[in-house]
Length: 351
Ligand code: SF4
Ligand code: SF4
Image 1 (cartoon, rainbow, N blue to C red):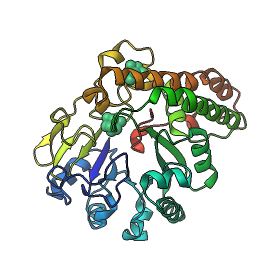
Image 2 (image 1 turned 90 degrees about the vertical axis):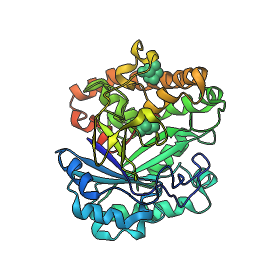
Image 3 (image 1 turned 180 degrees about the vertical axis):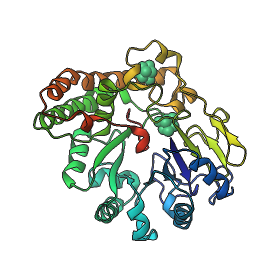
Image 4 (image 1 turned 60 degrees about the horizontal axis):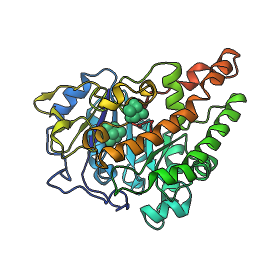
């Protein structure tokens, strides 16, 4: 199972699609539960992946060290903006399996939303972490300023990231004209990206672009039972106040509280929106995002707009599946290279 462990609610940046720190009263800036209680919970899971989360988790690098010194897990990782990578010594980085580094693509796009100089600092972090054997994932937020083809290929070309993932800046921010941007820019860019993916695949090379790879994996190996991130059924978030939550974004929502570190918790199982129950895309989409299903911050009309884009993106990826299967049958690509489990990396697959 995936355990997203908040080390703090504080953040050192104020990216414009997020706004920065949680209030200390909502996600305390230091853990307030007994680490021994959490150790017992996590060590009872023989397949635990622990991903440090925040705020910016490296603000509390001391807690990461204490945690890694006392809690056994199969996999460790961190979702970070990378700026404070120096706070964690090499010996701890060497024990991390994966680091998800926030970067939006080209320098001007990243720095416009995250702050001047952020892009070059993230690259510096990626260089160091890779040299220490940590797998790096570029974690992009895609806005109307993004050009999905240009930004993803830019990151691939740097040779500093093992995988690329993105999420659309929808639902969390004010409603914007997603539909017209998707028609004009996003979907044509995705088609080009898919062509690039297939061109490489014909040469036996798998480009590890998670929104493509994850859907192909679901189509070939195992459909998603629920939201790909696993929220509430294969993944939990442990807040610094000791609450165990279904989703790390739902820090204020009662439906997300599954229990607590000291008293234990119960998983809620996969939960789907009524729209998803009768949707033919469900095996490859899984309902996309539990938080979006429950909160509908853009209303039903906004949910439908995001959904339309999701289905169009899925059509682009799924159209390649027959050829992918042929390439496997011909031995051009090994099936195991196309398998992807998002809960090992804490990614959402569906942007
Ligand atoms: S495409 Fe939309 S309706 Fe279908 S499963 Fe995904 S989120 Fe649900
Ligand atoms: S994809 Fe949605 S449900 Fe899953 S962790 Fe992210 S916000 Fe939560």
